Image (tube, rainbow, N blue to C red; front, side):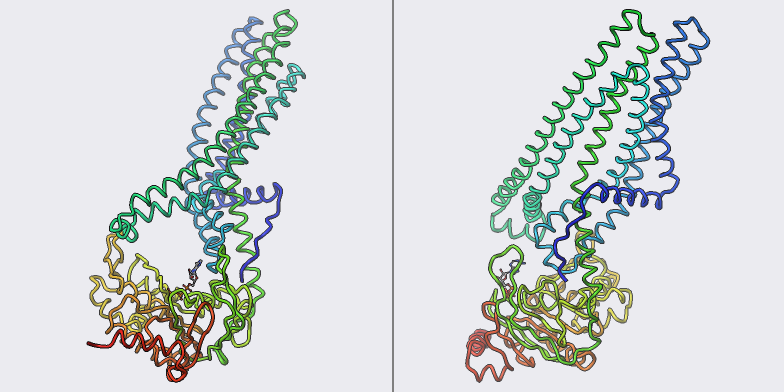
Length: 608
Ligand SMILES: Nc1ncnc2c1ncn2[C@@H]1O[C@H](COP(=O)(O)OP(=O)(O)OP(=O)(O)O)[C@@H](O)[C@H]1O
């Protein structure tokens, strides 16, 4: 089921829950390292106050003439300083190690699970989803780093609290500095928010430039670009898209930097103003020298503490874009799962068949329906051929049957039950499909076929049967390591021709033993005539076998009318609806569009 856009609960609690979850993830992965890191951050916070107190004691000792006391306090001040430097280093190294291992591995896997949890294709064509997928795709590192930055903020708050306590003991007036500290914090938050908004707003332009870059540099598109001489035009278009994306982001960053400068100017003014009366009092001999040293040390620390806290808060807010996108996508897939949880079971076998009533379908983001007013019945156990001109909606129809999209209006019934009420994952588990734009999975041959039914991925007999069904035994025999041959040049494997790749896709689609729907969308477009003939013969035989086993509906989309004359039912699509339907003989007798197009093709392919 297509999940409606989620309303992610607002407020800080959702961030807090995610951060706690992420720290929990670190604890499970590296319990000792997590405990050590938390301890280091706490000790480092307290250590700052210890340094200030040791310095005060040193100066007071000197003033009193207590050399021994001053020496001990001085040594303590030096030791706390050294500890501070050591902890800072250790903290940095451990944090990076933790974020690298948990962020880049565990979180990246979780993010992929969320993205793969989007069952249909319609999600991935909606800008609201796609923009967020772009943001989170490489965000695992950022999410975990963000969680540890929050721990740093808490440690910074402890350090700040201690600093203020010490300042208050010298002069309560110095506590007013806190008010000045709030200004840069607030301004910085505004700046970061502007940056996060700009990143989401320019995500589309960013995606476009990446697509254009890949188009020009990857082997598949690159060939055509070079031959057509369009390289320059593509590069210019990529540069324009890049400029658009970067300009938007740059403007927001400059604005954020401006906010930052104003905030710090205000804080510095307050800091200087607060110190003047204290220095004046000490100059007139009304305050202890140790107190002045304590006040200056602590005030400088206060500035550092606030600067650090502001930087950490802004780093956290900076990663809020990724957190928001991740939480949104998680809520979105959870809704889809919830919707599927209450879904009806998919039947074990089809008895009646698949019925489409008044189906209208528009691709997300396009204004015009691709299918409009489509009615037909695909009987259980039948072989249905879908023919029609380019762009008449054949592939769109099979995508709807596979539940990769949902109709805007109308219903698709599976043995009388609305397909929308069946769990998407269960329906997919009973669907086999070889699409026109088939995948070229550059992995081992056995796996590229076995993926058609992951439960039997390593079942060599099942894979071999699927290879036979796709008439691909000759291809398998020619591979140097048989099933274990690595495919694709990208990984130093064997590169296949278009036709051979198509045969692997067909074999993959033949892996399921008992599908209810078996779709072949232009299954032989890349194959020669003898292979095409052999494939159709095999698939007709397979369709008959499946039909007795599970009442499977086999849908074959083809441009070449001569290949589908044996189908039980032929649907002729025109402008998104069924213009004619019947058997080959019935349609020829009717003398309509099918008869006309069949006649034209027969003449074109006639020998001599
Ligand atoms: N993902 C998409 N987003 C937007 N429009 C699309 C998408 N896929 C297809 N279309 C449009 O829908 C219409 C029907 O396309 P479809 O692929 O279903 O036709 P077809 O009959 O299978 O064509 P062909 O014979 O060329 O494969 C076309 O106008 C096409 O541009």
